Length: 404
Image 1: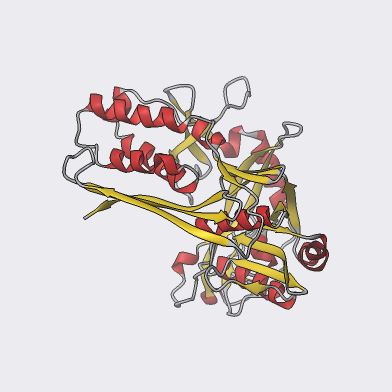
Image 2: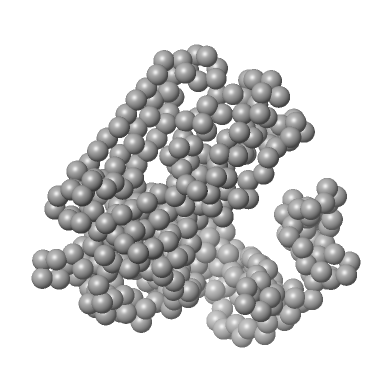
């Protein structure tokens, strides 16, 4: 925020004070368009923060009391500034975060999330079955899960209670508990199984639904982000029930963003791309290389390559072995790959394969000796496709790695 109260996009560099001190809301910011850093006390200088704080203070807290020694976890208030895309209005939202890492008991915390290969199979099956695809975002998902199965007391944040003898007993998992994601997943799984969905044996985050021995619906989840495709019957029997059970937010179809990927349904084909993400990548200069930004950029390109750009896999692998080159050569190789990544003509296409019963898996693989930039390391790669009897292909998995 500049002196004229105009909001600008900035990155939080560090906190300016201790979380328990008087400067707990002071943040050091880096303006994206300027080199200088600026410090802002959100607790004093930002009116939107004051408004949100007043709303938090207005919350009526139950006055139940428990022995303070039973409180094993502590809460803190996590603030987030959000902008309404429709009217430009800014609002500060707040949530309670539990310091679950302080829990001494061993708690099972594994929670499935959909694999990237499973998502691509989902798109291929949806296209071939001629299903429309939809995304659903769940509001405050962890609080909508099943009741917690152990006793946890937490100290409320100082903004809500100044009485140190007060402790809250949790009824639901909240953000920060190490098993919050697992508890939420089990809640959704229970509902889906009751609706006669079948959980995949290969990826527990995928469910499918049959009616009269015919595939009628597909469902996958990535924490609180749902993705589904199916017939009207599947929508009425399964999806509508989930909407009634869980409070949902945005529901999108045809063209939307899902877990960082842009999905578009055009005619009989479904496309997967990350143009928004690759457009944000910028060319680097010699100073950036000196400042150690090289590994960060390579990491960003690697994520793009593994998610939506198989044509970048070898290039990114080669960049990871080029760090010993001169700064000039490193800069040149990196910028070349960035320019290639920003080529928005590339999309993964998932066409209709016509028949699910007549599909082949096609594997291409290759390797070469000492073909990386360090003149020592060797690389190998593969690509796996689904091929229908109509000759059309759907990319499912790809990789390029060093061979020891």
